[in-house]
Image 1: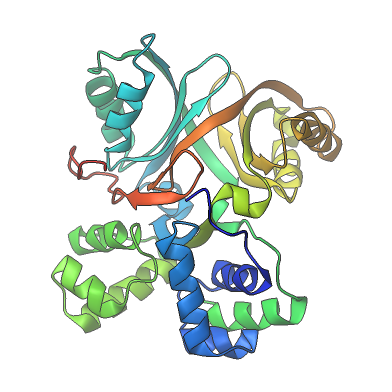
Image 2: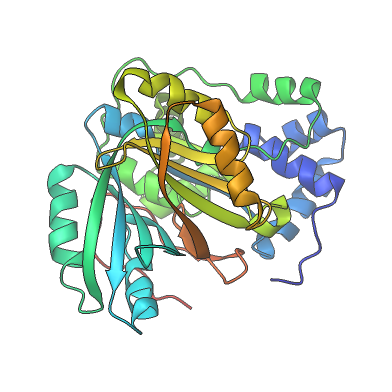
Length: 348
């Protein structure tokens, strides 16, 4: 994986196009990119086969807003010498969408999506609390998501093509709160492995008719219950360093500050949290030396805030349900299931 050739202009354009319209057909993409559809499909297969890029779906923040789910970040302290043991177990969990080995006053930063607060409590006290390789965990419940990693862009397309793709891929969000049933969660799990899976493939995986799979999938996406994202290995974005900031923001200016920080190009996630700090910021930067420059940009965008703590990911082990190797390339996936079974396929 580490020997994959850096993205050329064509690969970058395809990734950028799929970030804007993740389920666009090859014909639609080729028309906008002014390329042959066979070439687009072949190039994308090369990227995915190498684990260099991928399209996946994941539960959207609208579920938490409607009371149908919750997002949490958990700082995990591990027994000395048993960090990898704990990480390997946690990566198998369908409720765990992210596992990062980080610097600072925690060993692992774990991102969990649960069906509700009760499920989250049972997972923290039961699954996490039962691990002999774990000493302690501190849970931060997420609030408003001001920037979601699905909105991060490579910016490799001219404005006119971006606008054409955005218009072609736009969907009308449903006005009612999403009400997900069993088949919907099965589709969420299937899309979390392959966000471009055909309706035929989704139907077969979930035991549905093709028409039902198409209708339910479109409803999930249009309502925001599922968000699709196209991502790529960090080294290929020329930003291989993943940094996390814990920020204290005055309550009377919280929304304005959070939105200003969310607008910084390097930011991949900006979310309100509970705890001593009330904002968490995650970003990709060019180097360890760039971290302080990034912090300066954050402080300039939101005067009056205090950056209380920071961490650097020594290893991104799992991201949005995708299993990554030591170089940040995709090596597999564990289907996301906020209320799903406690077991998952073994890791290779």
